[in-house]
Amino acid sequence: MEKEFVIYSFALRMKKLGYNGSCFAFYQVENFEEKPCGVDDRDEYIRTGFATCKNSEIPKHFTSAPTWQQAFMWLIPQIDGEFKVCLGENGWYAYNLENQIFEGDTTLEKLIEIVEQKQK
Image (cartoon, rainbow, N blue to C red):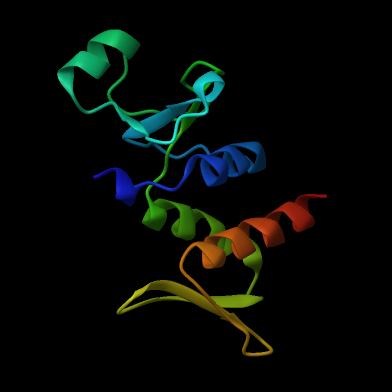
C-alpha cells in the first residue's frame, strides 16, 4: 500500500507549496521516514488521535502523505495549461507545448518545480 503515496521529498515540497488535502498517511519529519505511516489502523489512531490528516491539522513535525493521484489532482490546476497530464497504461505522464514528455516520478517532480517557480 505504501507505493500508493508520494515519496517523502515530494510530500515535503508540496507541504511548503501549501498542500492541505486530507490524507490517510503521513511522514514524521524528524525521522526522515521512507515509509508513510497510515492513520487508518486502530493503533495509529490511538497514537496520533486522527483518522485522516491535513497539514494544517497535524503536528508540525508530521507531513501529510498524499497519494499520487491526490498530488497530480492538486498540482494540475496550478500549472495553467503549460502541461497536459494524463494517466496512461504505465502510469502518469505529462507533456508540454514543445512535446517534451515526462513520465513516472519525473512527471510529478516537474510539476512541483513549475509550481515552485510560480510561487517565487
